[in-house]
Length: 193
Image (cartoon, rainbow, N blue to C red):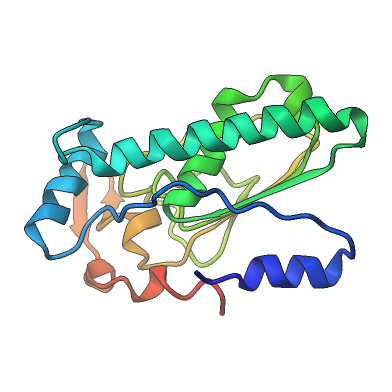
């Protein structure tokens, strides 16, 4: 896996401890028919029988991360300073845990949340949105609730033409227009640059 962010953070913050979520990440789509079915499972939240591999993977990752954060916060108390980062499905898992699984006190222990290519990117959450994204587009799987006002630094990066965080269509009033640039994953795979 690409550990560029982890390596850079350890370089910048001596003594930093990192933890990589060990869940089995699964792609939303590819041209393989199993993956197309898996993509349908991602949208519908199907589970089991191989149809919901994406959804099941998110649930597993969310459970691992929530458990790890509850343990770290409990063990370290006020000395806890946590930075959460996630890419693609990992961004979804990270943001879901921050928004839904942590109480206000636990969220206050999170110093920063950095997301790259979130499948639930909210193109209208200007307090956190970063990158060349279009505000007329949201994530492929839907629109994340806005992050509430918080002392936590939250940055959600999305590139224009990234089909995962921008979907395939522009919203123009009641109509949708296809973005031909989103028919490849090139803009989803270049966040380390």
